Length: 146
View: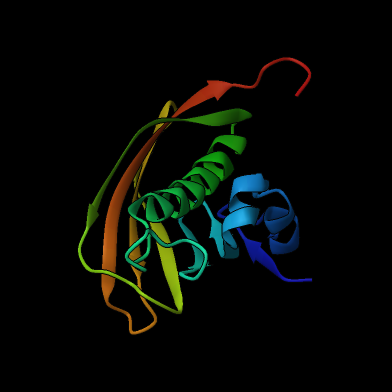
């Protein structure tokens, strides 16, 4: 079993995170490679996530970005018993990807008590940046019974 360690020494099973990535993440082939509040890395195949011209769909990049940023936000919120909900996401697409994999790396801009903000860079197999995103999440109290 592969694990990653968070800031408080808590360990997170990558197998468990991948199993709970949701049906959209599963359908798109997103694989979580590393996860902690300070850095989340995942990859996604270009094949199966393209638009009619054969290029990686911009919306697929945004799904990948929201996935990694949300995981980091949820892990940070869990430290104080809170859940993370998306508030805002934006994306700038820099270059096309036609094949292989794209890899997203989310690093925090800020990790607060009520908000998190992550910058997410997506690169192709050659390490060239294809997209830059920013995700802001609101941290809320956990609903009773969750």
